[in-house]
Amino acid sequence: VQVNEKRNIVIYECHHIIFDGISHEIFKKEIEQLYLGKNLERKRIQYKDYSDWQLSMNEKGEFSNQENYWVNEYKEGIPKLNLPFDKYDNSKSRYLGCRYNFEVNNELHFRLKELSKKSSATINMIMLSAYFILLSRYTKQNILTVGFPVAGRNNSEVKNIIGMFVNMLTVTCHMNRSD
Image (tube, rainbow, N blue to C red; front, side, top):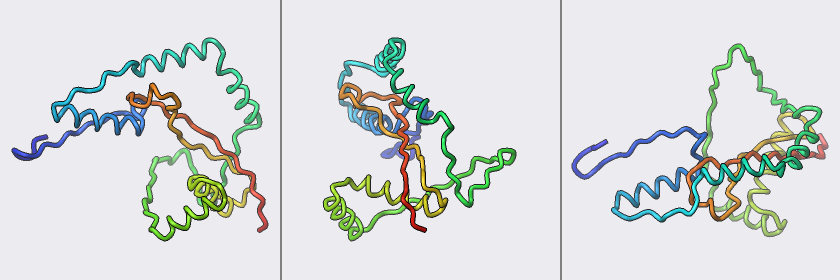
């Protein structure tokens, strides 16, 4: 969209099934490079190559150990998170949600870094622990299972490729509640 002689806006829409968050950043960077008249780095492999590799691994049965682990882990079903305000009525589902963004101030960030060093844990581990404690307080449950999307770019060859590399990581926490 041309706003005026000196300003243009690029608008694009891409379904999440083909585009993860890292791909979004790669795409923006490549559009900017093209706009500035630069040549893009030639990529040795494309997402299709990654996809073919995944299919080949699956056909060879190389994922069967992982599959067997998760089938066994959840043979009795995935534990339900019983949030007190989670009154799900499938017949009235409107798929509404919200997002709450906030920034951690410098003092809290410093204190988290100090706790991280003291406990030999990453800030992510500390925040995940706080999240589990919060969920445990709300639900009064001792065992909590939560899924998190993680970047599945564990090979340096795919770090600059556009595609959907996200995997779900399941984390189960066994709380020792005293209340």
